Length: 275
Image (cartoon, rainbow, N blue to C red):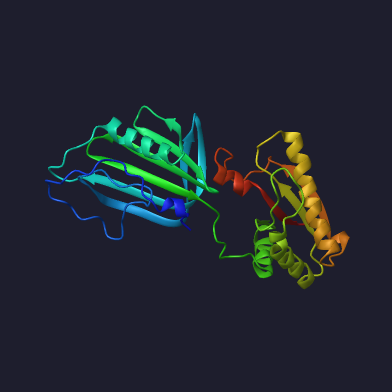
């Protein structure tokens, strides 16, 4: 959903009467709600996704941000006046600052990154302009994905039968805490269904974390989270305590790189391992 404050475009440049042949925009493409375009440019191609990830820079660090994604490549029309590279970046910078945004990184190769936080919304912007003939814009309106596919008991059982284990991402916790969030209940219900359907099945419940914070803290946290899952399954769903053993391995068994948030999210998980 686009916030009301996003609907008003931020004017990048003064209007100039065109004296050139205007190429049509690529089919299905239009300017982002936040930004007008430079006179004399058309949209060569674009990408519009309800949910995707893009890498931004904050100082020397790379940050992967997920949410509604807009990517636009602008090309200059033949005969149009080309703005200087610095002009492109200064226009975006000034427009974003008017919205209360900040520059997170400027690179010498013509890459600029910005962040806008307003009214509970978080928007990240990436501008690339290193030649006068074209410029690139990427915008992520940060948000969470609508979960359309849920792991059910059958899928969990199939994974354990094939691999001897299965990762469960539907069990969530607040950062640094071991209390299971209410939204995790559907996943717990499916695990309980699996165990009730296979009375002989016994599982190791293994907590995993990313590598943020120290090793000792993450080992303790992952163990506490696994214990919370076992407690929920035994006390609320009637699973015998002898069928479940909790373990915590912290960050030592990642399934993705911890260098970006998308990878860290994959590493924060609970795994069910057949005993």
